[in-house]
Amino acid sequence: MPYDAEYSTLLDLFIRLVNSQAGRKIEPGEAWWNDAQVLASKLFRHLVSMKTLSIGSTVELDGVADIYFIDHASVKVIARAALETYLVFFYLYGNPDASLCKFRHKTWCLGGLTDRQKFHASSAQALEVLAQEKIEIEQLKLEIEGLPQFGSYTEKQRKKLLEGEWRVGSGWADLSRNAGFHEKYFKNIYGYLCGYSHSSYLSALQVGQAELIKDQKMLTQSILGIGVVLMAHFAFSYSSAFQEADAILSTNPSAKRVAEKWRLGPNEMASIYGH
Image (cartoon, rainbow, N blue to C red; front, side, top):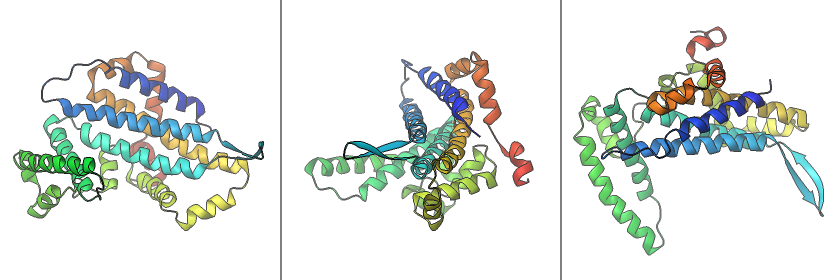
């Protein structure tokens, strides 16, 4: 089914919700909330790119339009990134326990900075950045070790956390279940999207078989449906995190109804995938 109208409705709602935080004063010690906006921006750009690619592309040969195609494969690669971005957003900011969210944010930051330490630096500026971040890493480790949530992990898990494995004990399927997705639904779509990201045989097979534009459009529309579901979930999780956004959601009843329709969770998927 075509998702264009509802995709546009939810994308418009997305903008309004995130813009509700424009100019908001960040209180001392609350700067970590800024990354909620950064992740929202990352997700938004993925969603826009998916919609843009769904229009199709024309390549010229000798100055004449010669090839037209819809790059459904790239839409799927971006959709995977969008899905993971939303799951990270929810993991960091979707829990009502603010202290747990802050703890998770610290471990997430530690993971990213630790990863960058493994990169090869070839300039003096890059070496300086790594040196400064190494100090920041040690400070983060001390802060994490001092938080009560750290004690809830096993000794082995605590070691991995301090090594930068911020999702220790939780895979993407665990994050998706906590974010309100049906487990089999997530595993189906995530496995499929990963196949395109990693150039599985199935991805090559489908690209080769979808020679007709109508087939390329069909394979693209199904992935835009994933975007619609992501935006629906985002509308409610973001509104739960920010009071101003909740007010925006309440004053846009038609868009809220669309979001409610597509906020598919375990109950809505039970008839398809079973309990």
